[in-house]
Length: 371
Image 1 (cartoon, rainbow, N blue to C red):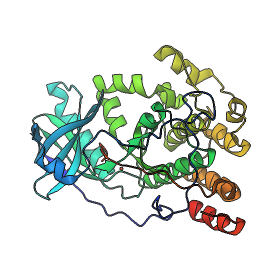
Image 2 (image 1 turned 90 degrees about the vertical axis):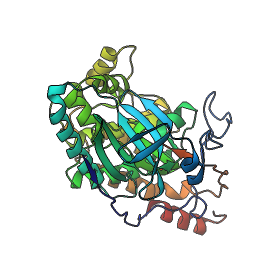
Image 3 (image 1 turned 135 degrees about the vertical axis):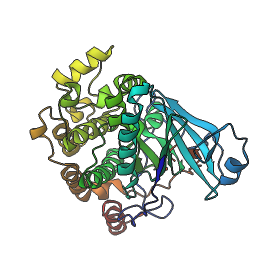
């Protein structure tokens, strides 16, 4: 049982290659005191780097028609493999889900899973990972998707990478645009977090795992445990209360991501799941510009509005959040477009697989970055 969809990708309105576009300078990494230089996390990665090497690698198993080559990552929700599609002769990523389903519930789970996969496969946007296929094989659910190059935000953050405020605004604006598109198609993500934002370059995000959160929550088991362990820092209050949620829950979660990128700290913290949930429900975090004086006041205001506990007080949509960020970039992009040569980026395959010296040239660079 499987479905297949290979949506086309419209030309992005603001997706320019790192080596061709004016480049927002990277902030130095902060594993220690502010300003202390750290190694570039965009340097070499430990993964194989070519389709040929994936195809020629030893096969460790099969699911559906796909030959699994080696694992790329694993979590409570599933394992991601580099894989080869022999029918279309291409390298892909395959995610198998770790959800233990009782026999009497399997038919219902299969229906929910495939319905969510169809919705994800129907999303064709430059900032959303492309889903090629999904199915059930030997009672294991799987999703086949494009194999991207880069790292997710969680890994980059763990390695000490911290974007400039302008980079953070641009990354989050692009994610907000992607969410606005998905919401227009009736698809709410429900689990926006750094691990689900994959960076193919310093300011080019791709959103992962549409529909997975709903499948895991509705079926329970280890999937819910993973969500409880991994996502409460970014969960909207209405989600924490198990109340019905809509697109504004994604706005809240993305606001938390923006806050974290700006300040280098999570706004809602605790030693246990209960403590984190209580913080989401009750704690009012300080403004981002009071945590870090280098954060522009305008961005701090945008983040605070997105994280309002009352959904009515937030941006009414991801599109509204994107417009606020675009407006800030239009007003402040010139300062971000200093002529800093970009460091070399050696990219490798990953599971989701995904300058100017005068003020006039700086203005042109800023325009390209935010258009």
